[in-house]
Length: 490
Length: 102
Image 1: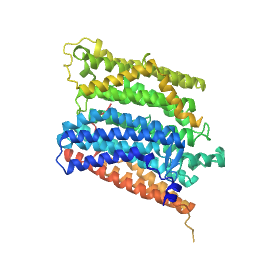
Image 2: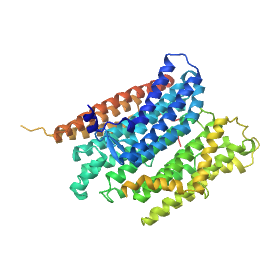
Image 3: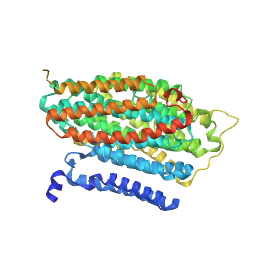
């Protein structure tokens, strides 16, 4: 029995974060539907579940130090730097978001734990997704994660916008999944591989020039499915509606987790599977990157709803991150830095939004933050920090990430791309500074009232803001981490 | 007598997928769009089965099981979402879902 287990690479440690999350969700479900238990018990269970997940990620580091880059479960699960980075990132996203999600859900009364269970399940799916070596495994992880997110978007059933967001997210997300899995099936038909590494081996074997056209089409379709999840143009149409309609307390999680995991998977596919097919898909990716930054910048400038503005800004940021990933190994390292910095700012800004806008409401007009600084000094200052970080002002992590990314692209001699990205950064100053202007400088008769902030929310927001400033002043630690992520593929 | 080769099945699945994709683009009823998604997933299944038979490997057949399970899970969540919308507005047309735009 043990010989078989060793032969197929049976190792529970490597999927322990997923197991911990699913177990926590199941225990929570059990407590919710059978025993009348109070909030305190459920809170303890959730918190211990999140902490044990992070501990399991820590255990995976031990396994990695012991075995190095290795695959398990007969080449289904992969343990490499990308998967460890993804696990840490998704674990942190869960840790930072569990508090706003809990507070938002407690307004739903009888459905409090519903959202938490969905969150834990979707996190487990995305953890599986970044760990996967096999494309079918990737698909399952993606779907476990996404299906929970569709339900999460429509949890506020009395709000028409929430229903609408949920249906739009569901229909377009499922379409993306169909396109993704059709691409995988085309690769399988023409190339007879389903594994990330086997694809590279196969290309190395037949030579990049004699790869069949069907395989190339399949790869393109696979990438389109993933680009949908990161909301890169021209596949961005769902993002603004979903961000606007979904309950504000959940949007930070929904936006960050799908983006983080899809980007890590795209990075691994580009660096591992496509490494022997140089310049094959360059024009396609260049088209997506340029369209993303242009469309995102134009539409973000004309938005009146802050959540829609953040959605279009997300399209621009996706273009930035993608430009690094597709240009080479150093660019990928820069993109991983960018991704981390962006995710921190995104979560922070949505925590602030959920306090100002109310946890379960959908619309958030830009005038709702008029004169924020008069009664809410702390919120206004942190809001400005995150917004300036997204815009890329010096002393924030946003500036460092943009700087590293653009210098790397310059080193790859992509001058046209660098100039377009610089122009979009300048355009970005307009739509990122507009909310700051309205919140702090613009004169108003009726400033927004003072919001009650819990101590835990103080801690959360200030630690996220500190990280934004810290990685802007002392970026070397994060740069070293992002170098380490790509070191096996140098 | 014409021999039916793997190519026929692959062409059929490509046509089915295209029909589903076109349906998603042009139809306005949420339920019909939902059926189009199912059609596309089943076209994928046909591709996997054909490839599996053609290549003589089991991977494709196993993939079909997983795709089927995912499709079933999507039915559950998708129908719940459509029903909760239907309760509010008496019709499952996506034309009426235009509150958020811009």
